[in-house]
Length: 292
Length: 259
Image 1: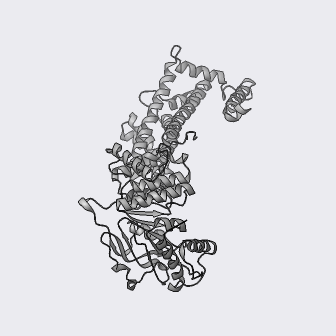
Image 2: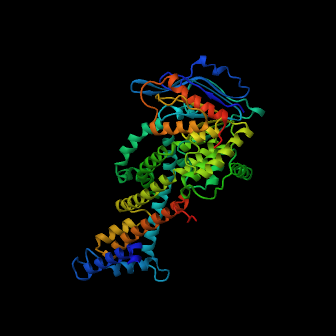
Image 3: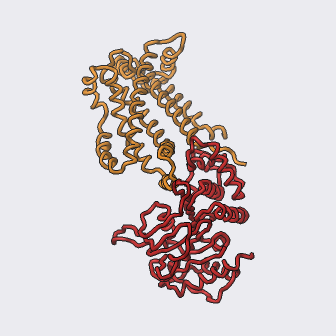
């Protein structure tokens, strides 16, 4: 599958893609498309603009990663697309067959507290599936199937208090995917996983998204997650940064990512010029595919 | 020593009884003010022993407990329902909360005389005095429990379009700690209101621990008076322990050993 990097330009506040970028004209037979969406919070000084004129497109069976510094509205965008916050702009949701309603799966940032402590992991997961009381047996099978497809080895009879953060994150992923969602929004869904599990989960996740035709939207901070899981990337500058414009290939992208992790995005105004080397690096890495 | 650390109450209770015995035995406090522990124990044993029973004390204790439990149940049922509604509706809560806070400071015994008249001096007056007295505490505790529900969980259920009935069920289970807290607090309060109202006006049946305590105090029957106090304390302790056990069983506080 051709990998694309959704470039974006300069306007502060961040997450701004002008209409002339041509993104809104991308062919999208069936999928999620957000055109010029904006969000703001009421504040003491009127309205605090979180992001403005964001345009993105996620065809079915693909994953879009959002990458950028803290406080630039990534989670707000996710929440807006999940219908939890009012956002302005045009949203086109994937077409649904058989007249059933749109299904959204969500892995929240606070996944650890998203489980009811009084119930086992399995009961917690069952609560989020359709007809949790009448279809217990079928739903159990769905959970088991999703769990196995992700290559996990969870003891679902445990209660949340008996689980580590990594286990809870795995369960949160199973919970979201077992719903067979049309749209999946996930805020750092691999952040608490160890190296070994993360590898298996990323592989299982990508396969699941492709096979089930899910439009997946992930906020990611780990460049490796970004490169291995995402078909496209929305890079948010927030604050500008300086780096070597000559970076190419996967290894360079990793060096670049480490640089970003170590140095942050610098200070001053965001601009297309400062963003482009980063986007180019990621794009090239994605086109080449990870070889490490 | 380790056993003592695990169960320090094994020392404090015998120490308290020993101090009580010493005070009465050595005449530091006269028998008209303090009965000895064995005299009090004798009254209690006679009241509850199946063979040598002092039926009067037993019936006083039973009837007062029934009154307190009935008032407590009415208050809890009404309080949880109203508290849920207020907790889910912030406007209603803001409208009613100051009134409840105002009412909470008024001693329920002040509502007792009108209730006596309203219910023709019947048992219902005692039960409603308890229920009305406990209601503000229950409503406020439950409403605050609902307001402090984990919004992330609620949001996730909403995003996943989980049926409203399941969402409500999950919320009810989640506020159980608040309900149990209210239940424990108002049970002690129910006992207090029951005894005070019985002291103010003896019920028609003639059986009431409050009346017995008042009469025994007037007649300097200190063993019976202290027996009433011990029985009331035991009621509070047993019901509280029972509620705590149910709460911890439901809340899954006890975690299994993980391998």
